[in-house]
Figure (tube, rainbow over the protein chains, first blue to last red):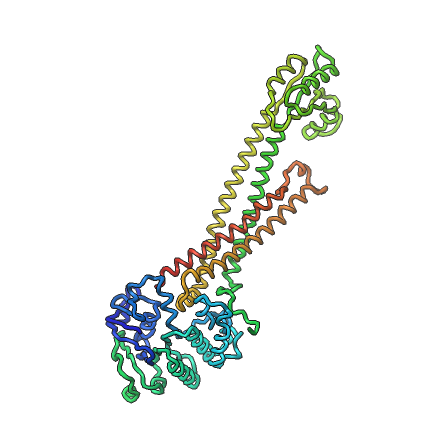
Length: 230
Length: 298
């Protein structure tokens, strides 16, 4: 699904924030991306959701080398990936319903085609009564769930989430992770970036990518909660 | 559907940057409309003056010892009316001749003592070439004291004045258009900068560049159009107010000699072009700017 080979990345003329990254994400699997703050997790996610280009190495997405793809072929690729941004990045002037419907709108669907799906999804994430609310009036947990609903509304093959429990209390964090597990059971591949040890321990058997100072310390190894604890 | 519109525009309807652009476009459109109104008025005056003067000539009859006043007038009228291409010839009464002098000499007894020549107003047949030189020669030979004035000197001077004024008006309009262009471009770019977050988010969720550019250009086209219409409304009200003021009984002395601003309906159609142009400028600027911003993203 996603394959990195000796990928390096730097911002402008700065130092490399990612070095010699090689790994692959398997279809239907639940992956974790861990590491301390500043290790490069967000930068790695940006490379996957095509917000940045690598300075070296090769990235293959859904069987295609993104480095050789023309720019106009990238949007269809992005639509196969759902992203839950660390800071949510909801559009404050749009309602919850309009925010969640956005990916379906950019795909060219009409309101009649997506309205029922969006309502159903929002009910599923517990926001069925906040359809018309604007993001500034929502709590952190509600914003997080809107961001998740927007990320999955177009049924992406891969869902990326950057510190999805970073801004919410442990109870809501647990609910969000259960939501991810449910989505994974429905067939969506997951890559969750977190440094929250409690979340890591509560997740089912999965694969983990551990970043440290821009390098991947562990790749594609089944997650062993005990080992992680050590 | 619970009354919720999920297909509203991506842009905030009443953002601060939108209000700024609105105001700027309205002010620049107001200035552009006033200038265009002035240019159209000058252009109309130029053609009216030229047509008015070229459509008529005057025969002056100065007193002559060789012929009596009545004979002089009847001979001149006969020759003139018989000349090919002459539509009408009419002798002006003494009162009418006095009336022509009043704006320069004022009313009063001074006019009564002046030897005002007899005048014949000659109207030419529209669209027909008239041999005025031949008419002048015939009058000189057959009617002592008769002199044909074809207004050529006035005509040339007025046409030159009108053309110069019109050229200055067009130059001012060009400058205002360029300033409007620059300001609308600048304000649109500033507005887009404020909404960069929207561009990035929509881009990241898989929108194509043309979709994003379409959303922004539609939003900014309406902003430009609404601002332009506001400017047009203000300018129209101003032009009408000026016209009413000049035509009113309380108008200052001499105002009746000033031209009517934008009196023809087709002039208002020209003015309608101003908001259309501001809307198009804002639209194309938004499109170009968004595509340039997106072009820098992967």
